Image (cartoon, rainbow, N blue to C red; front, side, top):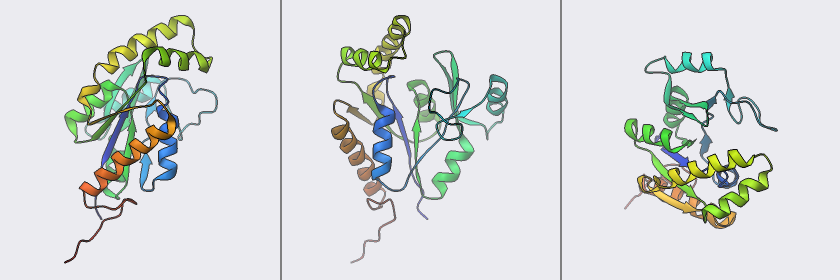
Length: 202
């Protein structure tokens, strides 16, 4: 069995990363999503174990203390804790799946220090367009919007640290670009579009 690769995706809040990722995963086989642990409260429609593993701070820190089998990375973002289970990621990679980590720039930097991921930064067309999208959610106060835009500007300054950068102007174009990245990385590892190993014979 050929081991899968780790795909790290980061983007400022409101860039449409979740929608983009769902579209690509529905169209390309062999991808699995690493469900992060978080101390934040669930949003409307989110389910425990599907979107996140929702835990309290004490539970989170107990997992973080399990060295080396705890978190691959963890960070505090917007006042909440987020972490990626090392055991879950490694077991899925060993089974040949390409594992997708949807994490912020802090987490991505930690993963790059301890692993060799393919990293993709999803950028908005502009900060003004990002502000428009965030307002369109109807979930942000003006104060929280200012905080998110300030954070977005800082996060976009880290884009050069990523293997690839994709601007999410239109969903379909961004999805095609992300699929192209995944397919190219599979081919580089002598695997087919479907993620299965290929044999080259003379």
